[in-house]
Length: 119
Image (cartoon, rainbow, N blue to C red; front, side, top):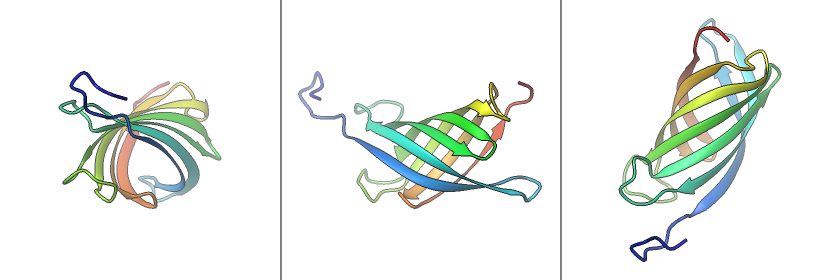
């Protein structure tokens, strides 16, 4: 898309993958994730916005991420992200939480998160 200043923007992409969650008690949960992301206009709060759906044996959740490049923007540059999560089915249905993520590549990321109390 062409912005008001005439520059081109709006690069987008889709990522599918697997994730492993390690809980405070040491238990592990594996799941899948699918995200669609899009570049944002220059001088915005975030360089990229992503919307994701996660699925594991306990249910599904929707995640919204805001990410910035951790260095010079480019396809190999890691991202630092903050996000919100909402349970959409299963044990976490109706619960909300927050997360952070450091994304190194399509196959390497790490982060932390927590659900808010209550339902």
